[in-house]
Amino acid sequence: RDRGAPSVAAGLGLLAARHTPAGADPGPDERRLQAAEDALTAGESDLARDIARDTLRRVTAPADRVRAWMVVIDAAGQAMAEVDAVFPQALADAGDDPRLLALVRYQLAWRALLVEGEMTKGREEAAIAAQLAARAGDRPTELLALGFQAQMETLMGHPGAPATIQRALREPQDPRVACDHNGAGAVRFRWLIMGDQLAEARTTITALLREVRRRGMVESELHFLRGLAETELRSGHCGRALDLARESLRLARDTGIGEAATAMFTSLAEAAGGDVDRALTLAREAVDRAEEDGDLVYLSRALGALGHAQLVAGDSVAVVRSLRRVRELEERLGITDPARGRWHGDLAEALVRIGEPVEAQDVIDATRARALRLGRESVLAVLDRAEALVRAARGEQGAAVRQLTAAQDRLGKLGYGLEEARAAYALAGVRTHRPGPTSYDEATRLFRRCRALPWLRQVERATATATATGPTPAALAPAALDSLAATERQVAALVMEGATNREIAARLFISVKTVEATLTRVYRKLGIRSRVDIVRLAARRRNG
Image (cartoon, rainbow, N blue to C red; front, side, top):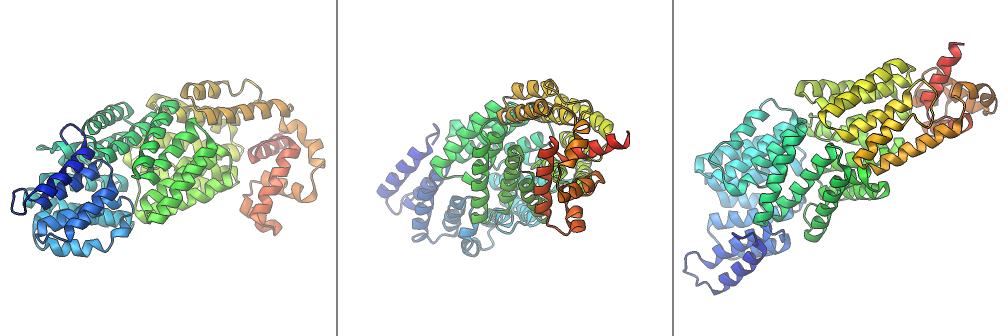
């Protein structure tokens, strides 16, 4: 155990238990429980659960029984609903002992979050657990409960989060809890990365990863691999992020721990620097697993990853469908910090693409209010990028260019390389001058620096389209409009008036899907790429 080989320790512990006389101290059941906990540390959840269940058939002491129940619950991982019947038994065994009650109430905090989707209730249970543990002098459990409370407060945008984090970081610290994936170190990392302190976040998570590897803490290693990958992805190091994410996925597959969460994050990394089809497959797997486990928290993250992969794949309608669900889920869960999932800009961008600028602006305004209150600078810059696309869709090209230029500069200064490149890409797409082969040079340079291969492929397609279309939409329009069918002309005319797809469908008594299909044909016939070009065409025609 001390040399970081918990799997070997579990096997030796079981062997020792077999040879330990009943009256010895420590006794055979104590050795079995320690072996179960070592198996958990090693990521051998099935073995840990089997040892604990076997021990529960023999032990009668409340402390031993509660300890065994905790192993059974921990072994369930994200699928906590599967062990729902355990909690009443664990509470009954705990009685009125504050130390044992603290252990059970800490697990009830996780149940409130994962099974019920009740973040506020989870926070309250964690606070009670911390108080009980402090009364019993159980510092490790107190630290874990404070870490959970701080995590909930961070996600909720609760004003008490910084103070709770400080409480969790106070001495004395327990060395094992300090590097646990639910401990204060992990909470501090999350606070740093959500607050745009990428360099310090990288230092923190690297140190945590090094320590849990030394101790053989497999589940924590998995969490911190994902955390380091996330830091690299935010920094625009897409190749490095992809390598780390794939490593974490291999570990998750080998151990069966956190597969949904790891598939979700690996999807994000694939969409940024790998293969978009693989990103879509992994995101759908994460959604399916989260729904199967009844895990609402990771379901929202998985849907966010799916929406992002769909955005990179160019399926805006699917993006909106996925991310609207995320918005509804997070409202229900009470997640208010937009730095948690960072899906808001993607939703607004996709809404613009399908002709819903009013809803896009609503998403931007609601998210901006929360980001301003919490000081989330990178979120605000991404929202400005999305708002510029709304302005471009309304024909406000000059304002859009100015806003995108400023957003790109801010994202670059904050160290968000991939988001900076996306701003440059958006800027090239809305400039008022005629598109040409060199229009996307800056975006190409930045995406190459990030090793963002899927985005580079998008730039190549956009450049090829710009080169192939030749004349501007204004020059093409007079002859091309004559080639449109009657319904196509009606739809194009309503787009020029600024109508959304829903408004067009209502006015022409057709479905929204028919509007989308008609617009696709209009784009092809006019040699343009989006409704933005139609609006731009209308403005140029009005100006003579």
